[in-house]
Length: 372
Ligand code: MEV
Image (cartoon, rainbow, N blue to C red; front, side, top):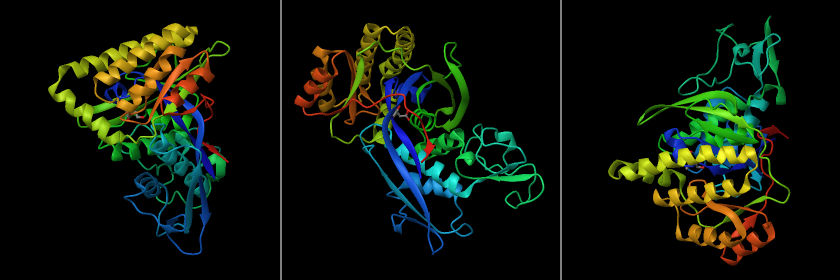
């Protein structure tokens, strides 16, 4: 069994699709995926057929990590407390958890003394710098899966690579978002904690890797960094409020792409989001709660301008206003969730609930993919 967390985007959703910076935190709600051996060959989901249309993310990851004809039969089951379709990254968390569970179940062949942390020692796996993930079968090809001198099979947790899981989940996200997906959801779910994603290496953050993806607008590259845990003052909290309305990420991302073509102010707003994310990051590391809150509210206005807010989100953001330092929609929008930075979590939660929302004050910046 592997589990992976959802995410909340503090700044920069939508703009990150076009390379602008964004910051996301892993949240304390997780999706858990269990893989059990079955007597019959093939792959089932909860004992039934794995339907590609209903579970595109699961099917895609299975395509990459399990050979339905050659590998033993398995059943995959999904549970957890991360609500789906709420803008909290449930599809990425599902893909990451499936990738972790399948990799742990099949293990990974490496050269002797190799490790899942060092792709140059893998005899099989998916590397992060390809376009579509390239299956590693190097060094001792043509039979890297067979036991032999100089080869070791890593099993369970030792075989897992967060990079591989986040890459496969990103590819699955891109496929379901018609080619337009940043790695923000998949990377935050796999690596956990607080991540900064940008089109350049940022001086004040710990660079991890570069992720490339071909898109309609040419190849995009995102640099992934870790940020230190936010320097929250005592009593400061982020309250997440759900509208209960489902927003389709792929439709919302496609809507922004369409409006960009006819309205030049959309690109200006996306660049403005990028500029204020940098201000927000400085406030985050300085522990300047007021500036952070302002930047969140400004980010919300720009998201509204690009057309991804909704009446329900506006109600919840307005309700949070009087008791919070700032509030914005989080994730793709069109419904889904908002979040507010507050020194009075109880009052802000009560105000959001009174306006029709459901709230969580989930722990933030938690661990990413793990084997349970
Ligand atoms: C969705 O959680 C975040 C978006 O920016 C889409 C993406 O980055 O792929 C709206």
